[in-house]
Amino acid sequence: MELNKTKTNKNVVELRQELMANGTTVENVYVDGQKFVCIGYVSERDKAACLKAIQAAVDGSENLWEAAQKLMINANLTDKQITPDEEVDVNGYPCLIDYDKRIICDHNGDTIADLDDLHCELPDEAIKTLLIERAANVLAEEEDW
Image (cartoon, rainbow, N blue to C red):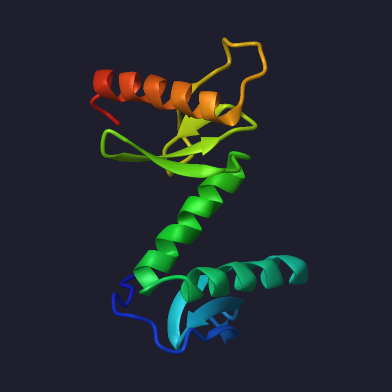
């Protein structure tokens, strides 16, 4: 799907039901009149949450492509039960820190480094420093990151 890469003006998010050729009714989300995503068959509560998330992403974005990226990142992190507290740069690579899980991960929610081997209480600043150092070592060794 090609997304409009220009600044959104109205930021109107709406849900429209559409009849497919096979007779199935689907619900599509439109942003400023442009088809954005099909949300499939979900509960009314989930539909409302989906629309709210899309509206928030669109309102905080310069364009629909940026909004789509934010939504995909949030979906990946939610699926992996990661709640990022802070975004940091590790040698030019954007990473997310979850202080409760004591992990540093990429935007896909893939863990780069953790502190599972340390069984003591640490302040957040110490957790951050250790995670950044460990991530830097992993990223230096791994060409896939």
